[in-house]
Every structure is written in structure tokens, then in C-alpha cells.
Image 1 (cartoon, rainbow, N blue to C red):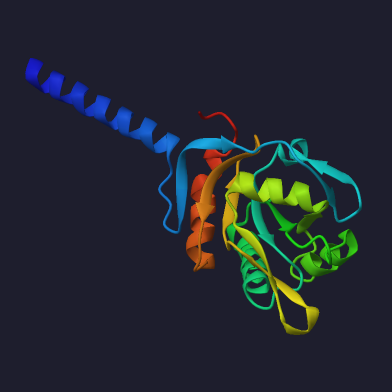
Image 2: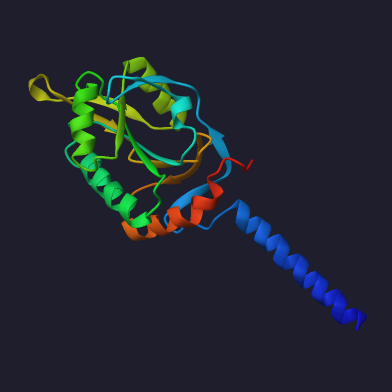
Length: 200
């Protein structure tokens, strides 16, 4: 009887430990969950309505962040199209999608607004001074470089990464290409309980 009781207690302790571990770290099929959320440094940019936007505006709700530019020929529109589908399929009403322009020379607030709203009227966008954008990209670990083209035009090379922020404006998970909507939606639903800023 004592052995059976001890075995039951050990099993219950194991289940409890596993549940605690699972609560701290959801299993993602298409992304990488960070062992500890990484705080985003403060920044000062401009939203699509011409209003100041800082780190404080990221707090309060989970956010998917993607860096790109409106003249992007393929990666950006493809990613934003998938993020629009993802937002619907994940069915998380409070989930935001934020597009950060890396091309402030061409991407005015109005240009960014027209661009992101073509994919989803709920999408948000940021632009601003080049130095501020470069600083924020470095903080996220996004590589950005201008590539001059014949005839005086140029394009922008950048990392195609989607970042998931918790509601305390900390990077909680990272998604890299190829982006598949169904598994990402499942991952977001699984991660939702862990995005309330209480961990770590």
C-alpha cells in the first residue's frame, strides 16, 4: 500500500512538473519559442496616421511584427498576404500585425497605409527617420541593406522574419520562411495563453 501510494505521488509530481514546463514553453510546429522573452528597446517612429509610435504602444496585446518595404517585388507582399490569412485563421481577436518599413525615403505614412490596408484593413504600419528604423531593426536582429540598381533605382535586402511579441512588448517567438498558414495559426492559438507578460 505504501509503495502504491509513493508511486502515485511520484506520478502526480511528474505530471505536475510536466504541466509546469508545458505552461512555460508551448510546443511550436513552425516557429521557435524563446526560453526567455526578450524586451524590445524603446523607439520613436510614426504610424500610418502620422502619429508618434513608441514601444509603449506595443504593450497590451500580442503583436506579429514584420520588417519590409512597399516597393518589395515578392517577399513582402507574399508574407503580408499570408499574415492576413493567418490573422483570420488563428481567430485571435486581439492579435495585431505590424509592418515596419525599412525604406523611409519612399515609404511615407500614407504610402504604408495604402500598402498594408490592401492586405488587411486591420494591419498597422510604421515608418520614420532612417536612423530610428535602423536602430529598431538591429534590436530585432533584422539585417537590412540598400542595393543600388542600374538607372539610379534601388531595392532593399532584408531578413524575412516574423516576430511574435507578448503583451508586454517582448519578443516571445520567431517564425522564419517558409511561412505556412495552418501550422502558424495552430502555433498562435497554442501560444496565446503564454503571451500575457507574466513569464520570465
